[in-house]
Image (cartoon, rainbow, N blue to C red; front, side, top):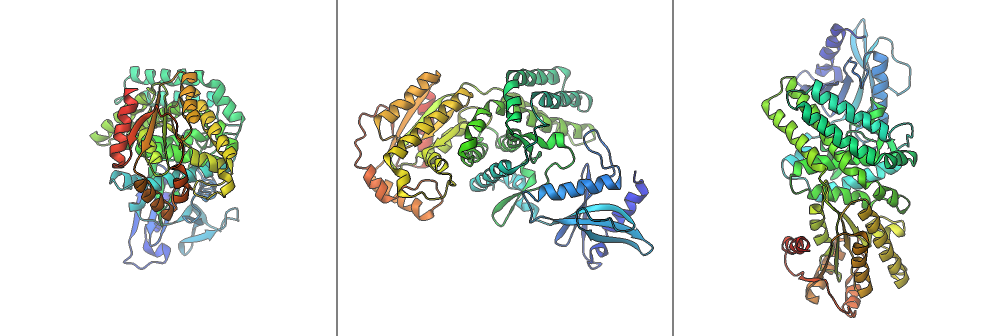
Length: 528
């Protein structure tokens, strides 16, 4: 094990600007975390593991620290290759300390005493946690992040030796132990035991689902620590960094448990709004391919448990900081995480809302504003025919489809798939907002029938506005080319000639502001 003297000598060297070839007047910032020393110098950041050993990590020898650095480099290059530059050895010889670049797997230089991960330095103002705290986190960036997480999960290594109900029960048990033994002044025994009982009940209820998802390959080598503090905006894009490299039990998890950390962090920070959390959930599902969509929707009953446990982990870690002498505000924050976890179990019953109207009426805008308020922990699933059609043709949401993709027989397939997925989600206990033109009476009737079949409340809302308003909106949307809809003005003009038949849904003037229309729609849903 490395001695304290050796460590302090290495820190002293790495705290000097000349270690990096910088002038004496240059600054080196040394940041210490629970497991790392980070040195910020010039355009770069270097991370050195502390010579420590806990139940969940072991950096006690130089070789173990090298292995951890190499794992950190390889695993984080999956999502942030532009940040993770390489590996370096700290050597000590007769002429003192040196910093030597080393290729992963290569022989260690003579006199190596420790190891560093070398990274490109970024502006902390770009961290999504900072952006959210300062009220400048944009919806589009969150949606882009969720899409990237979906693609990352699709490519992640399958790890069937991990995960499942028994493994998750151990996480819950460890949380309960830590809440009492290491954070006992913040949480009572009754609270810790109640939380564990709620979690254990859900684990037993969904044991078969958790194990079957593991067996089907949905337990993968994920990020493991996917919160807003580990995402930074660079050149307008979200870059995910600092995954768990030191413990496979923490990193090899159900992909929905990985996603749950992001959803929890967004929802907790938003309070009662949960708009960004809902957009993250739906943007993630919008980028699931057809072959996987059933399994992913089928896993949604686990989301309240997964989100709650993520909040419990943050509650106990924050409370442990209180025990270590943190300020009084940390205790209040720990309690807030705990209360959020408890509220995550109160999901309420599912319901179905259908939003219809011609192109340009703002169906998707209203659906996006309604969905967050329809159930915990992250709102309703938003099923949009524009997205479903793209999925059926195996293209991304913003890729345009050829004219034949809009033939009547294709349209029938798209609606059938929307209703099938909606039924699947309702069975999973999740509310659904369907978003489609619904120009035919039988399509509207099918939506109401689905709600009756599933025994859930139903609200149908028909949006309408003057044709000139619709045409202006469609033209503006087409020029931006940033929406999943391929409908242009020519399509709208054909729609205006439709015979809509009898309309027994709530009819809502869509000529106002999006917030005003959504507020009125929310009142209609609440009244049904």
